[in-house]
Length: 527
Ligand code: NAP
Image (cartoon, rainbow, N blue to C red):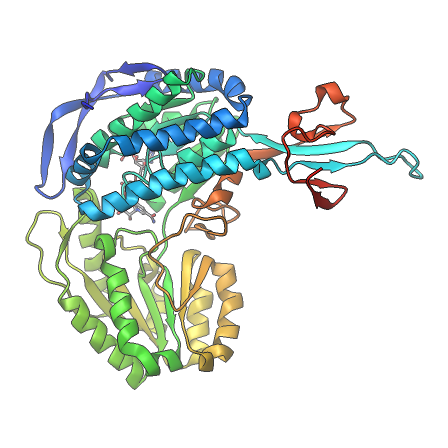
């Protein structure tokens, strides 16, 4: 497939006439000369959104089997791109081949899982309350409820997952599964990869004769087209993964609209790991090695990267720091996704090093390339941490700070103090249960996922996964952006009161023609 540098608006390939963009190879630090990507205008965004609005009604009413097939054929089309897709993504991201192949599998698996979800129809949450005509003092109506698609969704592809959180990533899969047309704003860090995947979606939509506008892909330099996308009246929800500043800016635009809309932004998390005393004493060395491996994975460019470790001070913690320092000092520098992310990493790590009361205890092998990150480990004490908000800032990359606490109480104070997180981890043994019992209720309030004896990097795409959490981890702690329940973000409930049978949606018809599991008078039944 050739990459042309055009946007994909409905069934058209459109060359943007605004400021042009080049893809960038972070390994060489140079632009990729060809093709030039034409930057889209606010009018291009408007056209994509208008088409999405027109597509919404017919798309959401397609049989569920058609919607499911759409997702499956996108997955197959991505697989069929073969090595060309991986090579382009490698060139644009600096990520290793094996990582990108794994990410492609995750992307196609995610699409196919959502196809199963669409077919099973549980997301409809079909609910029937029988009428009670004899009820005194007032009769009860016939009440039926199902969930319907929210409307066109704007998706901002993430820099750190050029496939799995991008054009055909989790947000797009969930929105299309829900019955929502999608307008994707390509991340400037992987323009060619975005076009390749976008062309697959566009082609499948055309082959299946789906309504034009069910999918569009826009490209642009600077914030203007992203702002226009969120502000467009046709857009009814936003999916975003990126910086706290970017997410908050989009939340503000969405809230200031004549019709405010939800923004599901995944932003900033430092993913605290609590090293409980008995686990630390028994197996501190192996925890330290696992911790460092998790920290440097993918050059630390994971939203679940363990940026903070907390433990009670003592010999076991000293041993942990010594092992972690030695493991980290042997870790090679790795190419980061963009020069901007690299610059932000350097600035963030530099800022940590400059904070009074923070000691730099280890750094990885020096960088040899233009955008390479050298891993770093810092140590501070709980009082400094509690008094220094900057120590909570996400440093996107392979850097972590270890917080020494004088006792269990101080560890609990740190847990209470931290901002909202995607994850929190307990490294613990059975002998640590008493303190774990005190930490868990605090961590439930702080994080979307709590792990025991694991490391937070690695997010399974499954039914029970929660990839969310209180602000600033996300803009809405009630949602997850990974896993099948992420479809909920793009649905809303509608109640049908005293509807004649002829007017009822299929999911709520008496005979249950879709063969759904439904809640009928409070009981889950297949009738
Ligand atoms: P970003 O700067 O927030 O950009 C993400 C996307 O949002 C881009 O398409 C960007 O478009 C757009 N955007 C950002 N601010 C906007 C605004 N004010 N108005 C309209 N559109 C806006 O994130 P990034 O480029 O991926 O990485 C930068 C930093 O984000 C990293 O250093 C890291 O701190 C953080 N990050 C966090 C996670 C996480 O999951 N926690 C993941 C990735 C990145 P333009 O660039 O074209 O304006």
